[in-house]
Structures are given as C-alpha cells and as structure tokens.
Image (cartoon, rainbow, N blue to C red; front, side, top):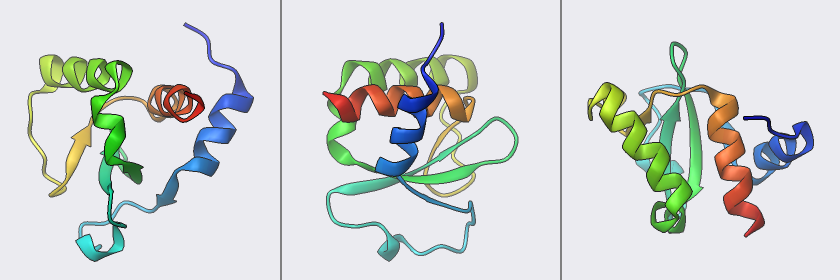
Length: 97
C-alpha cells in the first residue's frame, strides 16, 4: 500500500508533534484532543482530535493494534505500536475528509 509523501507532510503539519516523554502533563493536550504515542520501538507523541476516534480508518488501526499487541499502555496514554508513516497516512486521510 503506497502513500504520497505530500500527504504525509500535510499530516505532520496538522498534528502537533512533540518528543515522547512520560513526564509531559495532560494539561498540554487542548480540549477536544487526545495524546497518542505511536511507534514500534521509539514512541512519538501526537495530539489528535477526539473526533478521529469515530472514523472507520482510525478504528481499524486501533483494532489491528489491539489484535497484535493488546491494550498495554506503558506511556500512560493510548499507545499504537505501528510504524509512524502508517499512522501519518491514516491521519492524513482523516484530515482531508
């Protein structure tokens, strides 16, 4: 499955990307958003709109993560153990709709 690089760049612009750190307070997340940690080895923290949770593509991503890894969230927030480029492609599709 291929994704356009420009779509991934737009997704990075839409998301507020910050370094992954467990010490970041929940107050850094704006109202109507949630923090998710994405990555297979090195986790990065993304802040996304809560409305994405209702989208079928995002739900499929969560379902696949649950099937493969279960719901273990060592970072204290929602952890999605997938490649960052896949996550950005899904978010890019959601932000365009």
